Length: 428
Image (cartoon, rainbow, N blue to C red; front, side):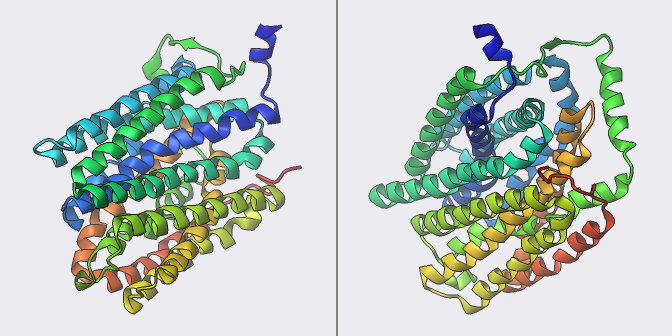
């Protein structure tokens, strides 16, 4: 009876045991590499140009992960990959904590962040594949808001709680390096505990059968990529994946530096603690609420009907940063309200992007094809982000945020190019 219970399909109740924690775990290393590193380097005196350039390079593992995604399909189970990689990421977080106080900390921490990024990208392949294998299509649509929400909660813990903790320790001790060492030590303990938890709680669906290799892995590898590139409307698909977040990719790298920078440099001069509250807590809570609402709305009305309102909700709220950079408000409530509007819109609109990737990944190679989609998604974040620091330095914050609003045009064009299956994502 125990064996049958382990291999039986997941029930709605059991889904709540592991989907929230799995996507919380998927989000932690990503928010550490992409956001927490930005705040840490800014506080430790690294320039905006270097921060944007080098932390954008850390997107590369997510860009090229389709190169090894088929091998995650070919060997062992998704469950095995998830647990093993979570333990490895916990070790990498501990490695960052150990290297922060050392000379050449910038180079050393970047090296460990690279290890963490590659491990996290591979973990994403396994986690997303496990999600699609363990859930039926209507469950995938119904839980897309939940997975997005708990992914955002990991951001709340990372860029909210951890940034606030760093600010408190920094204020109490006057030692920035000590504050960030403590933060990464806490994150390491959290993630190692998460790996142990998932070893116990993840189900064992029959569809996640173990594979110890194939007779010709290179041939299967090439066939997976060929099948993706032969999809109908592939040009429109790639344009949408690359351009949907063209403006957001640039904003993401400069939002926290703008909020932290001095008024003399055009910033709002928030403290580390204030940043943790405004951007990492209020912002992420609104991002989470938007994600939940987006998943619910799609499950009620379908992706096709929701697509245009959602692409607008991602791009139009960027106007609040134009306001902030021109008005330069000092009220924490005004700043928080502006950040909340932008983050809610982004969370609401990103649900459409996730469902679109699921839609075009359907088929026998859906794990690898979804990984290919997320690789292009990461490339669409990496390339604009790399240059965003230099662009901001040339334009100043106010003109840079105007440019972000103009960057919505490619996203609108790409959205007009794609086709969405009628009724996809709508719960029957």
